[in-house]
Length: 172
Image (cartoon, rainbow, N blue to C red):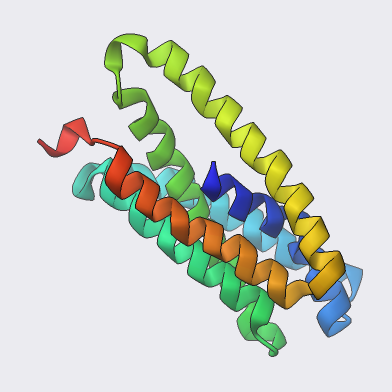
């Protein structure tokens, strides 16, 4: 859920931040968004091999940490191209976190995988809804820098949840 709070804010406010902070044209902002989508697609394909090599829990924790850090960088960097590159790269880790997290959720109690998948989707949806609401309030009150810091912190906090409250059966 915390990863989804992080990701929903990047998806909802990321392109707008480039338009407002850097006065990027709508065409350039669209290209950045297309880069995000292409990177997410690539990351979801590649992450299967990475998960197989390093394990679900390790991948979801590392990807969530990098997602959080890159979110903070994206919204706080004052240079356009490095910020745009960070926003595109973060979707590689977002998609890896998503794929590994879904797989890890299903494995927590294998005999209830259907129920766990439903709970996982519900938690992600709740995270996206609450995250977007919270992000909008933070953005209105403090600006994009605070939005990036808040959303990124949720991504980083998700690492603690994965580390202490999940078990990776494939690691044993």
